[in-house]
Image (cartoon, rainbow, N blue to C red):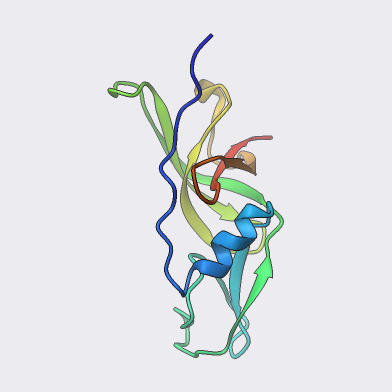
Length: 129
């Protein structure tokens, strides 16, 4: 039996602490600007679109679509897939695609959020639907 991959615990700061606390409850949070209405990820206090400090936390669905991806087949830790996915709510983020056949990953493919445990808060990744 192969040993499960170990992930380092995320580094937190006061601005990202609510995100990581929600992650411990299995909730994936994004921020939405209440001034311009735009959602953004990675959650931060200042809107990257209009620079307002009027932002609010909201839970994302965990549903996304692959925008682009790359598969690294030769790595000291084994093959892995890295991708940009676009959340159903709008923001795009860089992530790893895990727990699926890498040969079946494609642009436009539906993916869903999965959490991987660490010694701290779990880390968000995505897998094929």
